[in-house]
Structures are given as structure tokens and as C-alpha cells.
Length: 455
Image (cartoon, rainbow, N blue to C red; front, side, top):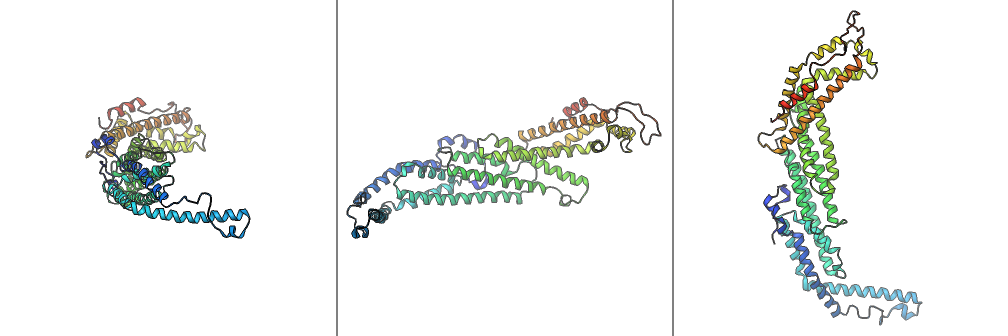
């Protein structure tokens, strides 16, 4: 029998060649189940022989020959039957103890041998404890152990030991995640515990393929394991992202540019890791991970939106602030009154619009491309996934900018459609019509296509 050697505690990936040949390898649980299936009939035959040899059934079925105080005293039938039943139970318990003692003399080596074998399998690959627990669940819950008290006692003891080993492994996994959080200096790209988690889940699921049932206790424990590890990973990742950058900026000090840089680094790390988690884990048939997937998608969408908002702000801060101010003013002011506000006259609007012509918007998008490429490209470890994430972010930036331009144009049409006398214009009328940007959406699309990162 071959058992894959790859310690669970190190979160290492399984070799692809080994994974492809895994169908020819028995798990420890499968081997244990086959062994017990062949062993149990032999043990039961010995137990039946011992029962007959000790005459356990003699005179116990109908209570013949049993003398009780109730019978001797001539009490009513109810008391006689109760006394007989009580004496039968006491005698049976005594006989059962005798049976277990004899069976222990014959098969006393079995508990120790099984314990040593399981420990050897787990020492070679801690993941095997899951298949061992699955095998014990299946055997203990089957009809094959009916009236086999000796084997039940042995297997239940091994089941408790296996559960202790499993719980110890969980603690080791959580400790490994915490160690990574504290020791890893690199704050870019997919962190180790996120990158290996899908592989870990696949290996766990393979341990359970040979006989899982809907109400299997091991499945419930594994589901809890997934939940604990996912939560620990997400918390560790957020802590790692927050620790990125200048501690002064993170604590609220430093310039606004420093704080924006730290926030961008935070969002970048979350986006990369949640993208990897969602795209890989969603391909695995593991319903227990549904809640973790939803949480990862939520974090991905939230941080992507915040990243885009920040990264677009640097080249377009004046536009964004100006039109955001108009939008807020519309809550209490009629649209036709907006141009009469000192900060939002037509002259003020034209000054803002003049800061971005076709050449400027192209330059802004080129600069944006360099920033996105810097955040999401990994020169040391280039991969197709990096390209996918970067392409996704770039497309999202384009969609958001086009949406903003559409919203801004709608505000112009809403507030500046009818030229009126404005404050600061000495009573003169500006009849220039609706102001227009010096660039269009087509210019933006062409620039995004031209300066696509990695092209």
C-alpha cells in the first residue's frame, strides 16, 4: 500500500504527477476499512464461540431456574417478573464482562497494532487522519458491528484518538497562517496560504471520496475546518494589508499622497488574493465553502470599487471634486440656481473643463496605466493570473471613467442648459449654450485601448 507523503501542516502543493496517479493509491482510510471488513467476521466468530463456551444464553431467555425473593415470598406477578429481569441483567452483565475478558486475551494485540498503524500513516501524511476518521464512521455506523461489543469498544477508542489528532492538526494550520502573517515581508501578490488553500481543499476532499454520506460526522468536522481556516486567512490577509506602507501614514500621519498610497496598496493586496480565492475555489465542488466564497466576492467587489475611486482621483481630482460639489448642492438647490452659486458659475466651470483636453486626458490615462501595471504586475513571478487580474482592473477603470463622464455631462445638461445672470458676471448673460468637455468618450476608449497595461 502506498500513502502520499505531504505534510498538511506546511500547506504544500501536491505534485501534479502524484495527483494524476492518485487513483492507484489507497488512502489510509480505505485500507483501514478493507482491513476491518475482512477482520470483523473472524472476530465475531470467535466471540460467538466464547458466548457458547460460557453458556451466556443458558437459562437467561425465560428466567428458568432463577430464584428470587419475590418468587420465594409469593408476591404478585409484576414483582416476580421485575425481580427476574433484574437478576437476568446482572447475570448478563457479568457474562459480558467475562466475554470481553476472554476476547481481550485472544485479540489483546489489536488495539495497540491499530493505534501504531494509524500513527504511522498520520506521521507520513497528517492529511490521512481524515480518511481514517471517515472509515471509522462508516464501520461503526454499519450493521456489521451488531452484537460485537469487543470491536465496538476498540473502534470507538480509536475514533476518539483520531479526533484528538484532527483537532491538533487544525491548531497547527491556524498557527501556520498566523506565522505567515507575522513573518512574511513581501506585501504583494497572492500570499502563500491563499495560493495553497484550493490544493488543500482538493486533498481533503480526496480523503473522503471512498464512502461519504450526508450525515457523516467527519464531513461536519471538515466543514467546520474549512470555515475556521477561511476566517483565519481573511483576517490575517487584512492585517497584512493594513501593515503595508509607512507606519506614520497608516496611523493617520504623513501627507495625503502617502495615505492614498497606503490605501491603494491595501486594496491591491485584497483584490489580488480575493480574485485568486474566488476563481480557484469556485471550481471545487465543496458546498461548505459557499459562505466563504460569498465573503471573498464581497471583499473583492468592495476593494475594487475603492481602488478605482482612488486611482482615478489623482489625474481627475479637480473634475471629481467639482461635479461632486454640484451633486451635493442639488440636494438643497434647484438646478437652474446652480450657476448662480459663486463656486459653480459658468466661468468656474470653463476653468475646470480647460484643465483636461484630448491631450491631457490621454496623458492621464497613460499615467493611470503605469500605476495599474505597477500595482498588479509581478516582475519576479509573472503569471497568467496576474494578467487576468490586471486586465479586470483596467477594464473596470475604463467603465468607471466612462460612467463618470456620462454623469458629469448629465449634470451639465441639467444645470447649465439655460444661461442666466450669474453672480460675478456684472449682470451680463453668457449665451454659450451647454458647456462641453474638450474630450469625448471615444477619446477615452481609444486611450484605454492604446495604453492597456502589458501591451
